[in-house]
Image (cartoon, rainbow, N blue to C red; front, side, top):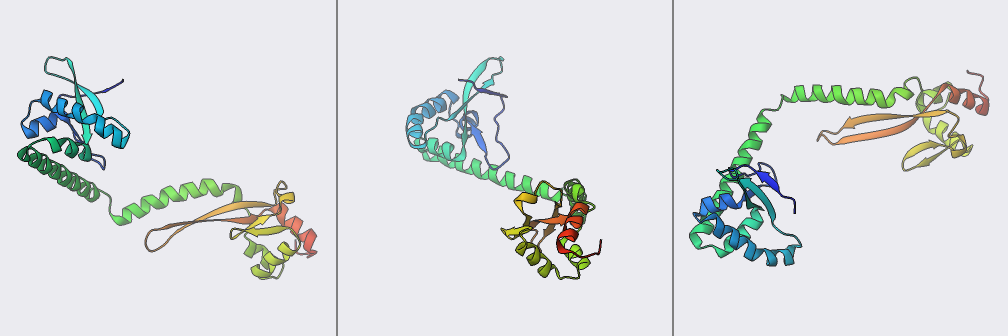
Length: 228
């Protein structure tokens, strides 16, 4: 089985999936590492039966440069192993985990403090979103919205959309107007995307249909208005 090689120093990952190695368990509890390994191996079958997986086995190089086995355990796995320890050893492990979690909270708070000011965050977000929308909407750059087209026919957008629907030119599905399937390959319409945010920062993405120059010519022929 392939294993991961870690440094001699014990490790604990500073994220939502913290681990403690058997080396650190031995250090915290004052037990020989070999005894900790034996306890883990003895308790692993029961853990595998309940959880369907083994403990994570890794390797480290000792002071002589030789590879040695050790385990990397989550908090739950670690405290499960500690049930076989005496009260003092268990207490030391609980305290150590509390120290790790508090340190992780302080790290996350420090990272938050290192973030740019809210106005700078908004500026950067505007630049990223703006460039993304520019690329997405580039094909629809010279098209007209249904509201703009409706005005050329002296209609409200409501009447315009329903006239086209009655003529079988478009249909409505999932709250959006779509060009009829038999007209889809004639470059009459293009899609345009709009992004907005609520006061709570919830993103809203709306995609809607716009009309090309070919679409205007087509509509003019169908509706019979000499306006174009």
